[in-house]
View: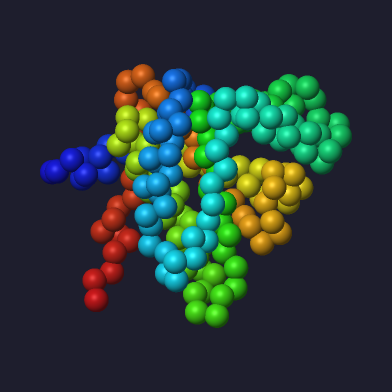
Length: 187
């Protein structure tokens, strides 16, 4: 197998709580984002954008999570609010991939959404190739319009994923993978 195939074969998600620093540098982040932006993009629309949560920005985003959650669940306890405040601090870096898919005369919304998904996967592969581990997550915050609005998303924008990126000591145990032969039809 060549290096690319080996990378794909060993790629696996890592739980954000086991991720450690240091976080990627600004130069590494810029390189990851530039590589992620090289995905198929029918019509050259760039139907996605990035939100980078680094350093203290992770704490500000976590505070926003706790505030929005408390407004929805007024009886919530302090332990759960602490979890929400820590949500973006579980990994040294979190990159939000925002889908900007919108009706277009030639390009179906579905193709634009798939392009945003391809950005998430390419970002995952780029980070892995640079020696980091990742977890592509959504959780409740990706679907909560109050949170998304406060984060600055437009009404038509959605979260394709929050990519948690960090370093992990040792190997991450692989999960059971699907039986590809059972999922394949030859025509």
